[in-house]
Length: 83
Image 1 (tube, rainbow, N blue to C red):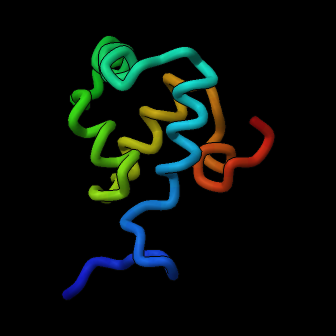
Image 2 (cartoon, helix red, strand yellow; image 1 turned 180 degrees about the vertical axis):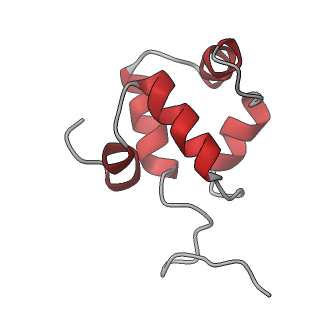
């Protein structure tokens, strides 16, 4: 069974918003991965890169982790609202 994609063929909905939020928080990809690891999530710089370049799907646990570390809601991360 093929994995779902957005209407534009992207593998996730957060790539552009993740880049913007990461830069807003003055995090490099490596620093974001470091903060995720400090919070107990096994995500490295390569995972962040693949998400931001739309080459990787994002799990619900990863969405939760990114929201926690970046201090945003799911809606803000997915839809880009209010940041």
